[in-house]
Image (cartoon, rainbow, N blue to C red; front, side, top):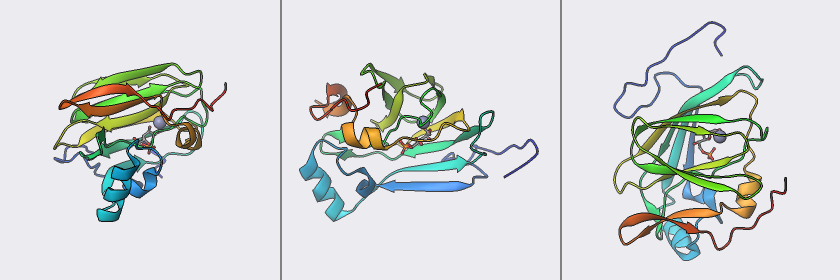
Length: 195
Ligand code: S6P
Ligand code: ZN
């Protein structure tokens, strides 16, 4: 980890940073229980267990004042009618926000608070999204053939709470309906995150 100011490049065609500390690859098998169509999930899992998304992290010390940052790449595809997406999480330190800058692709950020408020914002190249403190977030790629690539930056001490979303899901899902992305209720959503 560097102790002096540093730079890196994002100018490769696929936006892989010229330097990074960690490369996470999440396959379908990491998403059990998150996609609505369980039969489609099992069929795809047995056939291919596709790579859904990758994250390149520039890791900084886990402490206030530092900023974690990196690149998130969600590959195109669907499980049943639901588009590829990230697991999604609340920050462990709930009162920490995050900024996303979309570099490539077409998608949505699905968000919600522990109190059950929800929001969905479109992501396209050049668009910046500010995720408020307290809001869980999940990126969804709705393009049939292009990666959704975002640069993210969040407080060094934020941490990740994946368990709440694994248990309750997100309140809203992004599915393909008549060839278009649509925001629909998640019939399996249960509010377990009591503030
Ligand atoms: C971290 C930030 C992103 C996500 C990435 C993958 O706070 O929100 O780096 O980690 O988009 O999503 P997830 O839900 O698997 O961490
Ligand atoms: Zn986050």
